[in-house]
Image (cartoon, rainbow, N blue to C red; front, side):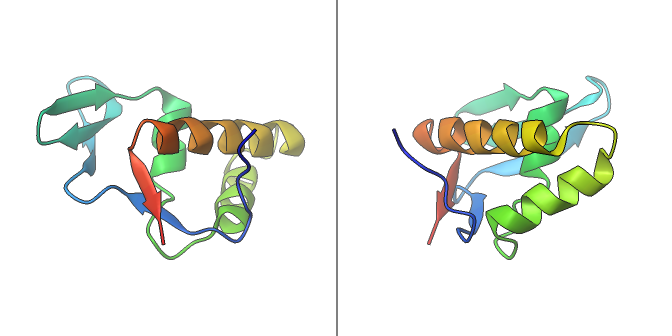
Length: 94
């Protein structure tokens, strides 16, 4: 099984853009051939991927934003999402 390293820095795939869609009330991921509508969790994670923060920073930031949620659950959800997003080609790392 693939692993997400806490020191890895992710960013959106070149040519892709994260945008808030007011009409839909959610973030969407825009790419040359179309658009992906994101759920709240995916939008929250992707907004953190700025090409500067590593996975550990993203986890810490989201744990601070959602202090009532179990920290281990947030970390697991982030890791699962990043694996899936990487498999789908939405994100890259150096």
